[in-house]
Structure formats: structure tokens, C-alpha cells
Amino acid sequence: MTVLSDEWIRKQSIDHKMISPFVENLCSTNVVSFGLSSYGYDARVSDEFKVFTNVNNAIIDPKKFSEDCFISKKCNECLIPPHSFALGHTVEYFNIPRDVIVICLGKSTYARCGIIINVTPLEPEWEGYVTLEFSNTTPLPAKIYANEGVCQFIFLKADSSCQTSYKDRQGKYMGQSGVTLPKV
Image (cartoon, rainbow, N blue to C red; front, side, top):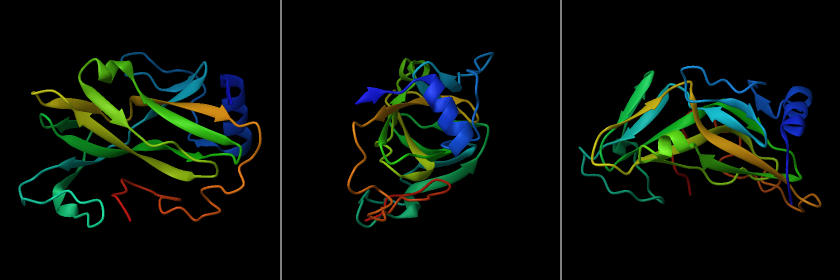
């Protein structure tokens, strides 16, 4: 596997709409940085969030997930309660090539504040807005800024295309838009 460069990411995004909207330069003035970096792409979170709450005494069950566990918010700054989490989604729409897998890492700015970002790999031929999970590991409320960078996607090219892509097997999160809750 090869880590792909800014030149490759730029070409795929401009010529084949791999990332849309695509920000060609890293924006970092008075914001948590986003856009194209040397060997990755720093994605933004939109202004739509689902913040975990347990006011309904719900049980978290990935096989029978209830939306009662969340409060939906549309805001420029999302507060995550202590030792809790929120879901968001990227501003960018991703369309992954068949011979590429994408790994997501949280930005150090948020990690240094005790906010951990989790995303599973973007598999070959997956497309959609990426649902992001923000865990507040601190005993204090934590803030996430909408339309600013929250994570970096690293693109890895395989030595050959896979036999079966995410699209081929009609993956359950294919083409997702907005914050997508767990499905079985």
C-alpha cells in the first residue's frame, strides 16, 4: 500500500469529484485547519449534530437503536456534555476509488482537549457524507466548531483493485447523507 500525496488527492477531487466541495489549500487562519494537506485531507464537520442524552433512560443497543438517545441540534458551536458524545457529519461528500481505502484520524487540536474523533475506514467505492463520532473524555463540557476541521483522511492505494467493493456488496451506509445512526 502507498500513502497518496496532495497532488493525487487534488487530481482525483478535481477530475473525478472524489471530495466535494474540495478546498485546494489548507485554511488555518483563526479556525481549526481544513483542506488539502501534504498527504491527506482535513475535513470539516457540518452544523448538524446529534448529542447523546439519557433523559429517556434508553439503552444503547446497536441492533435496536433508538433515536430517543439523541437531541438533534443545528448550531455553529456544539457543546458535548462531560463523558458523553455527539454525532456529526462532514461538510464534504466522498466518492472513494475502487483501489483505495481511506483511514480517518482525529486532529491534534481536539485530541489535546480530550475530544476523540472516531470513524471507520472508508472502503473502496464507498460514497457519501461521513458520519463522525466525537467523544468527550473530560469531566467538563467540550465544544466542537461547525464548518471547521475536525479530522484528517489519509488515502492508501492498494497494489490491485479489490474483488468486492463496498458498492458491490451494497453496504448499508452507502450514499448516506446527514447524521446516520447505527443500522444492522
